[in-house]
Amino acid sequence: AQSVTQLDSQVPVFEEAPVELRCNYSSSVSVYLFWYVQYPNQGLQLLLKYLSGSTLVESINGFEAEFNKSQTSFHLRKPSVHISDTAEYFCAVRSSRGRLTFGEGTQLTVNP
Amino acid sequence: DAGVTQSPTHLIKTRGQQVTLRCSPKSGHDTVSWYQQALGQGPQFIFQYYEEEERQRGNFPDRFSGHQFPNYSSELNVNALLLGDSALYLCASSVLGGVYQETQYFGPGTRLLVL
Image 1 (tube, chains in turn brown, purple):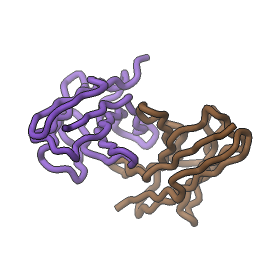
Image 2: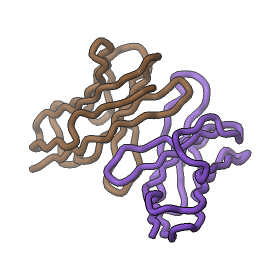
Image 3: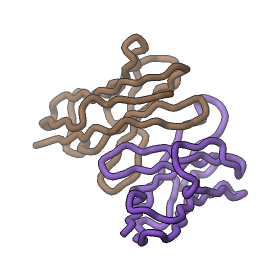
Image 4: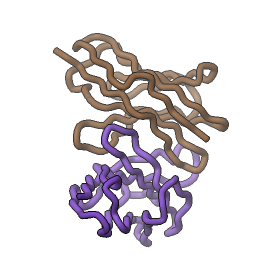
């Protein structure tokens, strides 16, 4: 069975500060990892994904995540956050048959 | 290119009633998955449909059922509603087959409140 642990339920930071949202996974088979973002009263938006190849993946809005197989982690980072990055972030692992297993989420709050 | 759409956006029902939620996948997608997101939690997988068949199912009772139509759209039905069924129901679409194709894109969700 697959599982995802997001180590921080809430992360408050100041604008323009760096941030790291931590995610650890458990999977006995090939690993496909995702980060989704959810703004209030909205659905999930795909932020970035790791399917294969380079272990460092980037999104168009400055986020990046690194797949670390030895530490079974897929932490999300951004060097400088904006107020508009305030949202709930979900890490997910996908099974070979397409089922996504999500973590409990991390609420990122960016303060001015 | 329209993304995943869901209807209705909000719904209020009473215990014991039945509800049907609808989803239209992204253009070119043939697979639909449904998730339940309770308040303050991550989404939980309900089931997935492909070629009008339930392909796999999560740990949900038989009160939860679904259907996929020839145009790939899908419905989620919940019978005998319980208070605990109150949640945001998310539909995700994807293309079956191949690692790179099976990325799921989510709709805005239907928020169901059971009183």
